[in-house]
Amino acid sequence: MADSLRDHGQRPIARLEALGLLSPRLIAVHAVHLDETDRSTLAARGCSVAHCPTSNMKLASGAAPVADLVARGIPVGLGSDGAASNNRLDLLREMQQASLLAKLTTGDAAALPAHQILRMATLEGARALGMDADIGSLVPGKLADLCAVKLDAPETQPCYHPISHLVHVLGREAVSDVWVSGKRCLTQGKLLQITNTELLSVAQLWQNKIHL
Image (cartoon, rainbow, N blue to C red; front, top):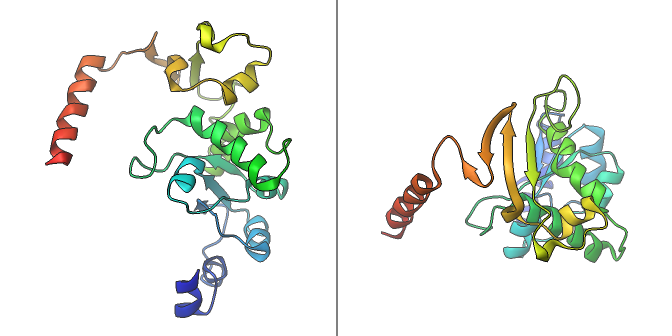
């Protein structure tokens, strides 16, 4: 912000607006330093936001005003950012972090309830990408992108509210099966296009390359 004000005499959102770059095609990533004018402008221009709570907390970057953005009708999807600022890259964890961070920053325990967080991870993310006509929800005519999770482990019991459980209890380890466009890619935790052993070999190769 300081650099933008010094070099351009404007906050970044105001500069993007002056350049004609704000539209429904723009996804503002992180969005942790928005003032009232910035938020109103993003809403008026139909822009979206990619919220990356774990990365923002790890780097002490700040907290996006997600509850307020959602209340303004701004599509907010969830992201993990990259491995440099997020060690797990786990969307289920991002759901939990987004929910807890919103409650902490607003002082409102009811902020971003579980069903709203799940929507951000699915349909709102698709909406932000302009792909909500094809993905993001399970309805006839959309691509069959499905993810199944296990709720039979002792540490996941008891389960009284599946959506709350999905957001606040489960992690990526609970994912058992995945379908993309109706094609099964993961079954009972095992990859079908590449074996787990092959994947581990690739990971080890890159670990050595990066370490060197």
